[in-house]
Picture 1 (spheres, rainbow, N blue to C red):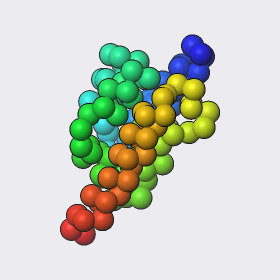
Picture 2: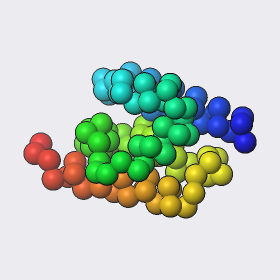
Picture 3: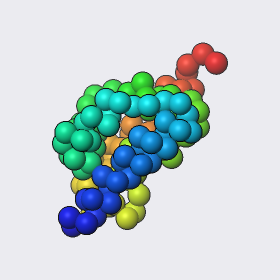
Picture 4: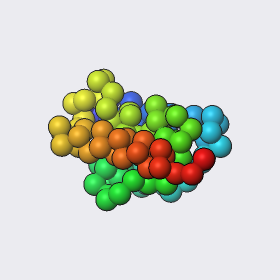
Length: 107
């Protein structure tokens, strides 16, 4: 399980932080600090429990790049053992809420 947690943390940094920054110009510094302070899995759990949808997630939705989001990584089949069904449902709900918020935003 330790190896899987390390792979997940690597994805959090490389995909969710670095690839997002390079490909969209959105550098989520608070997100990176959380991952470094708490580790990838715990940081993801903390973010999933937060109420509401983050501005960053809405921005990714507006750019049609939710594939770069932490929630999308949480929902990947290879990381399924790291999260409960409830946490995976929260991730799916965050993605749906972000899509809805982006659709409501003025163009």
